[in-house]
Length: 250
Length: 294
Image (tube, rainbow over all chains, first blue to last red; front, side, top):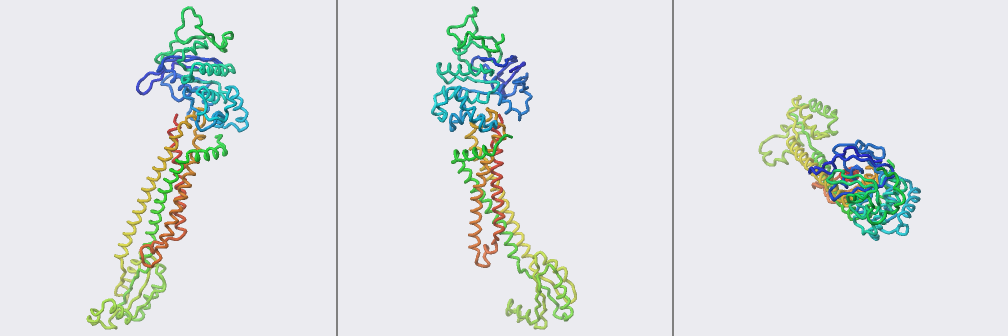
């Protein structure tokens, strides 16, 4: 589903954001990208959205060669990728329903599809009752749920989240993670860039760690920090520890 | 392009209303700038008109020798009648008439000069259709039998033409400068409006909107702003036209020779409206370009 081959990205001020990163993410995986601020997590997401192009290396996404994708095809690539950000990026003057519907209207879906799919996804994120509220009238967690609904309403193949819980308290963050987990179980590949240690340890999913742009760790069912030699799970159990996460590869 | 008319209409209407302050600012910018452009265009046409008016009645005089016989006089008259670039008919002035005219113009000096009526030349007085044709009449009759000389106020014509040409150029330059500054002002206003909504644009990009999908509502918005603004400007130009024509009713005044017909005014208005709509539409397209480049 996602494939990086020796990807290097350097910014104009000669900061190396990613250095020779290669990795492979299968369909239906749930992956955390962890690392300190400035480790290249956001660059990773921006490359996947093709907001940036790498200096060298190749990126494959949903069967497309992202680097050589002509500019006019970029919107069609993005229709396969849902995206959630720390700052929600909702339109403040549109209601919850309109914000979610916007994602479908923009890609030219007919009205009846919008009318059918939006309530469905609002139900999924638990905001059916607040469909006519404006984002300003919602809590941070609710706003992020709207953002998740907007990212998912189009049933994308991939869902990217850049610090989705950065502005939320721990309990609300867990709720968002459970939501992402539920979306992941529909077969959607989910990638979450975060430095929220508690959540990563709680979820026990594949962890990719970046350090100054270099991939230093790629671990199935990993934790935030370097795993202890015992390999035991840290305190707290993930949402569904009995079930192995779908598509997990070592 | 899956952009539906319904979507564009809805987005345009709600955007215009939501950003009504910016809409008003853009419309007023267009209105004020294009009013000035329209006024300059109107004055330019007025100046062109004044040239024609001023030189209407420029006369060419074919002076016959005092001794010219009837055949020679008649021959010149026949030739003049056949000229297509001379307003017909040409008037013949007898010895007596020219003598009286000279007396009127020169007074006692003429009388004291002692020229008798018989010694005064007869003349043909003609009005060329175009003042510039005067020199053609001169060269045609100069040196013909019985013709003493041919005169026309050529120097005066040339000076007037020069003044009018300069005046027209001044108005054209003023109109162009105003148009450019109007375009920049409008572009800037639209850019501010779009800058205020860059967040919305970035969200649209994020969820996979094509550039045309984003651009079209902005362009139709710009076009409507341009149309409304230029509509106001067209009304101002019309009002200016009416006022100038009212003021120019006394014959001989500067304004009276600059009077324009309704059609010339409508032509100016059409230019103003088309320019307004084009600037609004293209201005939006240009202004949004850099926000699309993500």
